[in-house]
Length: 366
Ligand SMILES: [Mg+2]
Image (cartoon, rainbow, N blue to C red; front, top):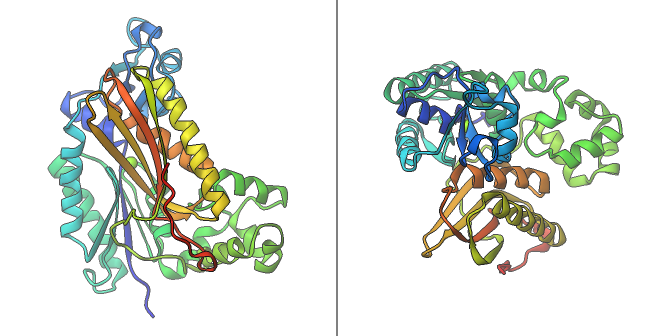
């Protein structure tokens, strides 16, 4: 059967780019969105930042005080600190998503700034036409919204996702079905979605740091110190035989935990600590019952019971706690409304994959 053609689209430094356009800022000046740094004395966290700020080592969910030390604002340094403008992001995202969904056979939004589309029929199975299509979409999004995007084209979700990371920002990378082996040659295992830091460490103990070494080791030997399931999966990754399904996420089967604060909490650093703890407990539970998830969701309830849920999906189901910690922490940082007292925070691992040998009714909320 012929391969499907999957495109992954990722907006580059989405939040920071939207603010840059909105405030007409210079993109070369480090822009840090988040809590008020109060000249380095402020509490709270970095929501997100632009590429210029990333060069100083600033990252989403970092304490705002640390960001200030790395890149102070005037008169001590070039940092431009700004509070997020609510409402801008979902509006921009909706416009991008409608451009993508209108120009594809199938569409799946993975988060506010990421989506997968299947264009197999749309492009008549032609990979050159898919490449041209990605370029057209990239231009259209830039012309209509001023936003930069990166595209990855491949025959599986993993290849499409890895492609969009390949030459960010504003990149397009296509991996043809007969280029998959070449694409993975000498590529670090850490770049493969589905291999979390823990698995990468275990592989490194056996001298495996790149995908060529995975191939050389062979499935049977690999299964001996990982698991049969992992060994077979990683070999399917290299063969280009992992999932090419693009369909809206269903979050019915999930594991979630949440915690309510005794007193409404205004310090985002404190809430982030609670969230970290919840994620670790959810992932521990997932391990215990032997399931992996493809969707992470953070729930924030503010004073007055207004509740928001922010989700992000990954290309393959995983049970690696480090992966979901990073995902949940940045989802929280990017979406929390600073200065609003928080009553409750929660985390949910969704779109669970249950190994068929242990089907069970999942009703695991606490
Ligand atoms: Mg992005």
